[in-house]
Image (cartoon, rainbow over all chains, first blue to last red; front, side, top):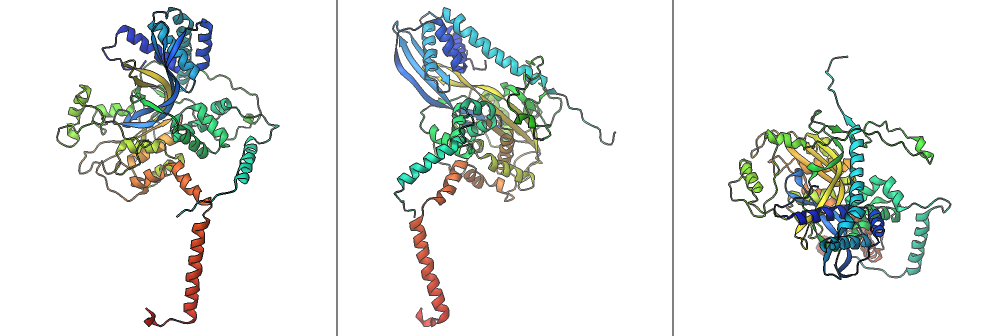
Length: 156
Length: 393
């Protein structure tokens, strides 16, 4: 995780940040399947129905200098309230409205203190998938690590 | 003046129907799926995302399919779609130093901390056509794996900066820092930045305001990263051939994925809303000093969506060429040093829009030109036959 954590973030906020960051990057098909597997369908009302938009991605000149606008990426967001009153916010990469709603529902369930079942049913498998994907790429990259040797001119 | 035409609706509809048929091609051959384009023509998808200035591989694949593989047409489709979407905000600048690198090489240091990683590269291939690919159904074996290296991969320019051998890069303050001019106050600026004592300037955005000159470096970098790969490549190549020579070394080239972090006001903190693949190139350029700057290395910077090395390196070279004024170098009159020329001509959607419009009906304009030419030609010929006396004036 590279999210900057202001010192003021409470443990509950830090957990929510990690959770939402994981869900935002999940493959929508896997997220949808895992959610369906929980059998949950909490009654809720939309505060902001799923909406597709963009976020301007910024970089820095020379990686550390002045910020500049690199280009946009698509995101979908959704905010809803469970009948019990808990509010959930979902943002996902891409244009899957269903996935944004699922993330908002998961966020709201955690806010309502009913997240425990989701930890094993949804979050753990997503975490495992993300980690395995990252690990595989890192292992393939490591296999292409190269040592160059400088030839001395005039030799051989 | 352009005068519009009307009519031709049926012919246009029929032309579009035929276009759809031609797009599909021979129906005995399986139709391309978006997933096939996304997975197997990934570099075309990357180019469309970079120049379309919208990171969404599925949309780029759709645009490529709709454009029959015409990548500039696909970029145009993506730009048009982008304008229909609301913008929710901007990310905090991505931290490329923490990138999960698929590839990371340096042409300046062979033993750099974190190591050199070739990654999936065309480099060192022999550029011989591989006829085995012409046969379908051969899935390549999985690539070999080795133990992953968790060590951080700091930027090469960081080592040079530690020795004060390279021109420093700092975030831009929203308000001028109340210090005397020049680079020798930079340590103090850095200290203030680290202490959170200055608010950072919001970078200007080409997509929200017309391109206005003089431009700052942020605006130039935005224009270059979404600029046409061919144009930026040629400009960069011209600097290598001597038109605004700036002696670049590829200090580092890295390709990998970084998370994109956005502040969510409803939550009161930032979350990662996604992950993007980026290619970053940092050049280290020879610089013997000028009236305002001591001898040191200087930098050019390229950062592009997707795996796009040619574009990232080109961007870094052109960025460096356009910095001549800031570094107190001479304007040699080279095209790549001409910011106005580069920025106004690097966008392929603008360029193709203006270029291709001239094939549309211009009957009235041309009619007036035709009449003009007829008249002055007749006058000229008549004049030759019987010269008018000067007194006619």
